[in-house]
Image 1 (cartoon, rainbow, N blue to C red):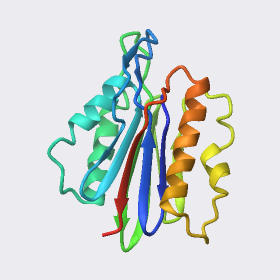
Image 2: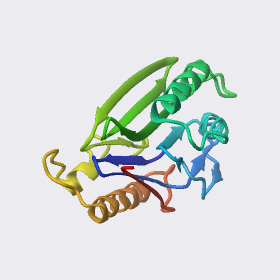
Image 3: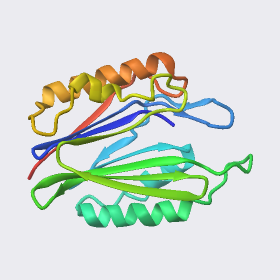
Length: 193
C-alpha cells in the first residue's frame, strides 16, 4: 500500500500520490515514478495496494476520457468485484484502495472502495471532505496528518494552494518512514465545470 490523498471541495478536487510501486511479496521496488492518480475529463481516480490490481485498473480505463463520475464509479465497483478474490503468487488475498472523485449535482463527491480479505467496503462523502490511504508501515497512521495540517473545517473555504501544500508536506512526511512510499510527487486538480 502507498499514500494517496484527495481533498474535495465544491470548487475543486486536489489529489496527490507518490510514485513507488512495491512488490508486496519480495518488497522489491517495481517502479519509482508510477502515477497512482489519473485525471480524466470528469473525475480523478487513485489506486494503491496490490501492484497487479493497480496496473490492471488503470489499464481498464484507457478509453474512458469522457466517462461520467457515476459510470466510472460503476466500472470501478465491477473491477473491485472481479479482483476481490485475487491471490498473489504466495496464495495470499490481495488488498487495494480505490478512490474516485468528481462533481455531481454541483458539489464535489468522493467514493472509496477498499478490498481486503475478499471483502469490499464502500464509502462516499460530499463537498468539503477528504480521503487518505496510508501505507500500513506508517507509524503515525492513527491520526490524519493532512487533516491536522489543514485544521479541516467543513464550513471554511480551503484555498487550493494551501490544500496542495498540506498534501505534499504530508506525502513527504510519510515517505520518510515508509518503505513503500517515495518522495516522487504526482498532483492532479479537477475544477468544478
